[in-house]
Amino acid sequence: LIGLNNSGKTSVLQAIGFLSAIASAKVGHWLGLRNWNPGQIKSHFRKSRMTAFELRFVLQERNYSWSGVLDISSLSCDSERICRTDDASPPLLRVEGGFYHLGEAGKSVDFEYEGSVLGVLREQVLGPELARIRHFLRSVSASEALNPMLIRKHAGPGEHSLSIGGEGLSGFLHRLPE
Image (tube, rainbow, N blue to C red; front, side, top):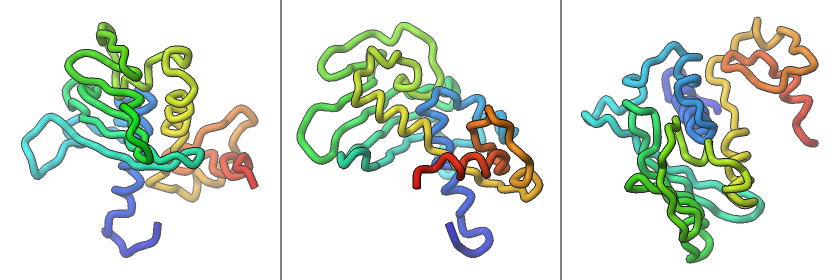
């Protein structure tokens, strides 16, 4: 991202990282890395404990939409939906009213979770298409506060993640397909 100082570049990167944290069921961890509390992610323009989101993306030549509402007090999505947007098929995932639906079948959300239900369901339960979507959403990485000293720091052979300060960037770039 390129832009003037204070134009919102970091906010865009934080939003991308935040959505990945929701999909990974690691919202609390994401907040902790930034020394933030849950109140700092809600809108200052509305007095709501809910934060709505929508992400449209293309994966393997299919168009998708992932939308939901994150409850700031529980750090979990009370409602969410993943749909193909290039056909009229029913949602692949729908969460509402204490139930999650994969296709038409609905099951009670009788477990504690953080972020998205997508982040905690086993791959066998999700099926191949939702598992690919989850992998894609979890793999999105955004380093909003690059630090030259951390970028230069050597990442060990087992390091496969990119920190918010840029630590592990060389290994991350090395693993990108050509």
